[in-house]
Length: 291
Figure (spheres, rainbow, N blue to C red):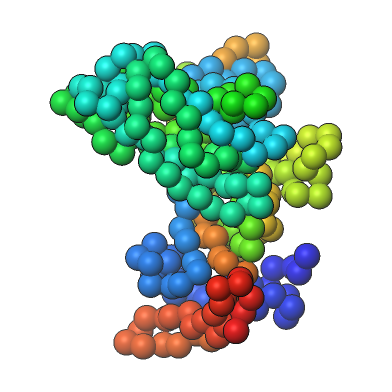
């Protein structure tokens, strides 16, 4: 794996040449869709009771699948159904067996399970797309793997989005983490951080790499990294925390990343009207290989 800012990594040379203002210009252009092959990712998480064991900032315990599978989706409310007053349609974003992105919309049927058309190896996001007069979910919408019965996530009322606090880097991509935040309720001495599982370790023991970021005692912390953290394709990334005393606390967290498709090459920085643009020098063809 090339080191950040090494001469062997063309993308890393962006960061060695960018000042803070130029860095912001790049993120704006990426978020605006002006840079083909570059995607911004905002991840959010919430945990109502972080305990003394290291755990994800997630409202419920989720599990990573060992194989791709169809998802079964149910709601605790009969009103979360097509034509109902609650959530009608859920939009899913995930990865297939090859870690390629896939998206689909699923019509809900209350407590009766509905299944996805696609098979998922990782679930990245789920959100209420359409709703009735109540403008959102009225029950807890649960997503479970049909083959293994593992819990993939939950979409709760009010939030109407998945708050797992995790992200998996798609195939052919490298992700760069620019910023993160953690906020907590009751002031407790708490350790927070980001952990990742590289693809080399997937399929065997879950040997996570924990990068400790900070200690907290109530309030909120946030960090904008001068040099972003780099994660290769197929890496699972989680926001995690644990309380250092015999107690629990609720916590929210988030992280912002940029995923760059490695089938594009970025070499040049062009200044136009005091704005810097990253110019692609290679474009992937239909087979996924650079031209």
